[in-house]
Length: 250
Ligand code: NAP
Image 1 (cartoon, rainbow, N blue to C red):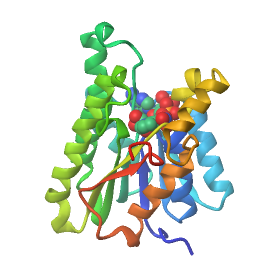
Image 2 (image 1 turned 30 degrees about the vertical axis):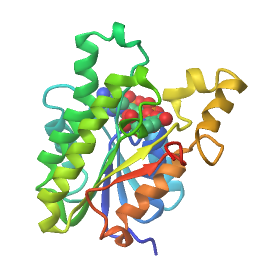
Image 3 (image 1 turned 135 degrees about the vertical axis):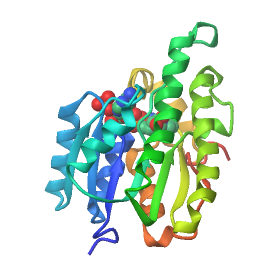
Image 4 (image 1 turned 120 degrees about the vertical axis):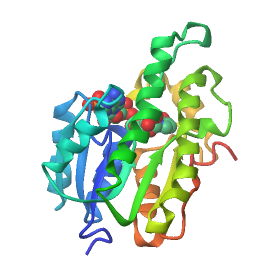
């Protein structure tokens, strides 16, 4: 029997990339998984089908994040499927590859709206659904602890806000036995990096060399860390920033 049998999880951005890896892993561990997506319904349905094919239970829910009313809309969709939550994974996020000088206010606001504001209000409005002993797991980035990609300055700032959210929220929710942690990936092979990471063997080798382990991260690498935090074994870990960069910051 999986360690998360009887639990319900919601993974924002669970349809693709790291979120899909997390959703599949939590589903394998026995949780009923809400697979959230923004606009790509087909990807979410594919992820749900993969979870079900592995013997799990999942449902898809699509809500655009980073717009007014997003959190309320997401919980309204969630409530149509189930009545309680044990594990909230704030994973959905967006980046930008524009140079510092070219990032305008609209783009800056959008980055903060999706990466920092949406997790804040999604968690706030979800608290009456989140059961005592639950988990909040925020997906950040190693870039909040080292300026190795300074061109991602605005993106990194949004995730820095998420890191601060994690620490403070852990104190606010601890009395209910709810743990709150950040998992910080390094470079992971997902769609968001495909343009440059898969552009040449040199790009791939350069990314792999950033990790102490000499390879590029996979969604499963991150999902396994999330699964530990979500499990009973993770009960005494809270308010933490977990480096899941494969030693890129070592
Ligand atoms: P990805 O492959 O681009 O997938 C993003 C997921 O988030 C998709 O499910 C997408 O849904 C959803 N999403 C994005 N913007 C949304 C919005 N405005 N509203 C609703 N849903 C939205 O990304 P990823 O690489 O897996 O990254 C996942 C998380 O890890 C992000 O927070 C990212 O910042 C973080 N991270 C990634 C890396 C990396 O190297 N990949 C490294 C460090 C941290 P749709 O497809 O339907 O839009």
